[in-house]
Image (tube, rainbow, N blue to C red; front, top):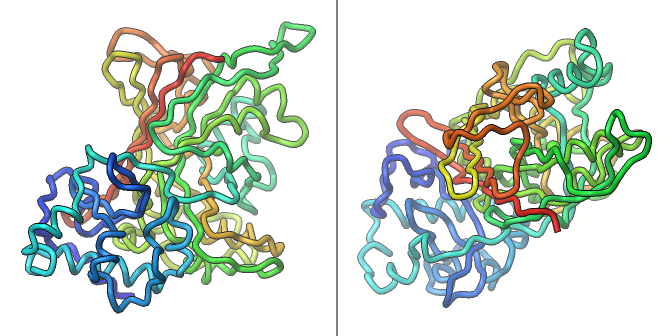
Length: 424
Ligand code: CA
């Protein structure tokens, strides 16, 4: 598949800073509003947001067969639901409009100034309405670390782990966009030395470094999607912080799994980086041994080499990076996750989010949660301001960033950040 917009030699007439996550090869989609404009769809280019409603209404997207009003919406569900052929054609056309030698928009000063809005003037909103949220558990390093801490170092992985991508159905209503502060959750916990449980603010609040993919096509109830077909169903990816209350989790999770320890807030980054834009960053996944069942077999490069980092910024102080990981470490790839998820006929909906599970790497500085970084609270993490952390404190802002880089092209996600306020 040849995607012209991905050509590493392309340059835009819009100035793009060298370290920008949003060069012309990226063109991620999001929903924004400004003081003067209602919510609508945009594309990030350098330090600007390109207003797709404006482009559509002024004829710049003619000939693509797009329905009226498709960008003048509070979510991208309608747009991504047009299918990948259509959305790919839109990305190709936007790339063409932004090319340095294309004068269609470049030389029309008034149009250009209305179409391009400086990022500091926009507020980013949730990019999609999320009908369903699934959380996988697909990083072997993370599963091993948790199994080692809570069960048995010699049998860290459960017997099913290498045979299927473990996951559970999470809560969609509490997924919010980057920058939305939230209150420390309260819940029921029981200390090891206590006879009875108590109710109060979570003491072991944690982040989970994850990525999530968003689906753009329905399979219809009863129709499994194969690993070969899976990519037709995936529009793109966001960074995802799947906040977790470890003390609540520990007491409540038996026997049905995560519940209130997980559903109080999860944060998504605002820009959806298309699967198309990540083509150049495909890598082979880890060797899968034992061999997987036939419905989970796949061919080709299905992992993505995306650098990930997590920083903690204490209130009014400087940020400290506490984790450097990569999406390439995932044991189970997204094709397998989707094939497994639909293997029983479960129906996908447009806008669903499917999170990877905490993405930990092989070294202690690449662990994607405080649970692992502090090894269950037995180690402390030093902050630049002289304080220490085992878990996340009130006033802390947790920031996650991600980007892929090859041949001088950097395709990034921006960031997902959130500040923790005291319990209500
Ligand atoms: Ca998770």
